[in-house]
Amino acid sequence: KDEMVLVLRNREKQAAQARFHIGKVLESRSSDGLYDQTLAEKSIEAYEVFLSFYAKKNLKSQYEPRSGFDDPWFTKHVPLAEQRIDTMRLEQARGFLAIAEFYEKKSEWTAAQKYYSEVNRVTQSEMRGDQDANRQKINARANAAFGRLFRKRIESAVSDYQAAKAANRSSQYEKALRLYRRAHVGLSLRRGVLDQYAPAFTDEALRMRARTEEDMRRLDGVIARQRPGGK
Image (cartoon, rainbow, N blue to C red; front, side, top):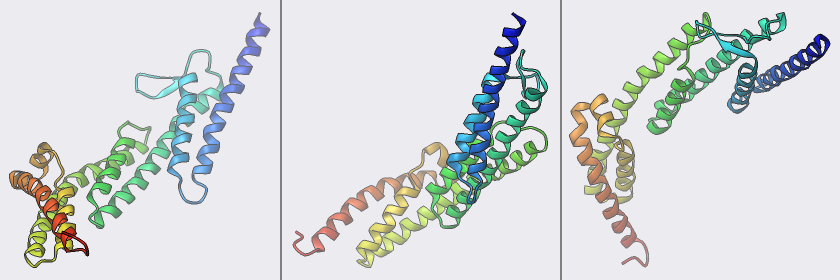
C-alpha cells in the first residue's frame, strides 16, 4: 500500500512539473523579442491552473502548497508560480500604460480609455513583496489618468463642436461633418461620468450630443445633394 501511495505521489508530482513547465515555456515565448500579451496571458493561465491543483491561499492571501504537496519541490515552485504571475502582470500593465499614453497624446480618447482600463484590470490584486509597491504606483498612474483623460476628452469634444459650427457657416460641409462626428464620439458618455469629471460641462455637453445627431443627419443630406446626380 505504501509503495502504491509513493507511485501515485510521484506521478502527481510529474504532472505538476509538466503543468509548471507549460507556464514557463509560454512565459519564455512571450518575452522572445517583442513582448507578446497573448502568450503572456496564456502563461498566466497555465500557472493559475498549476496553483489551482497544488496550492491554497494562506491567511496573508499568498499561495502555499496544499496538504500532501509539501515536499521541497512544491515548497519552492508554488510561490515561484505566484511570483511569475505577478511579474507578467506588471509587464502587461507597463505595456498597456504605454499604449494608453500613446493614444492619449494623439487625442484618441476611446482607445486611451480602453488601455487605461486594462492597466486597472491587471493591477487590481495585491502582489508579493516589492512587486506590490510597483503595482500600486502603476495603478495610481492609471487612476489619475482617468480624471485627466475624461476632462480632456470632454473639453476637446466641446471645442470640436464649436469648430464644426464655424465650418458649417463657411459651407465647409465635409469638414463640419467630420468635426460633428468627433464631437459626438467625445460626448458619448453617461451623465454620471460627466458629473464626476467635468460637472461644469454636463448639461451643455448633453445638449450638444443631441444636436450633433441632428447636425450629422442634416449634413449627410447636404453633401449627398452636392454630389453628381444628387437631389
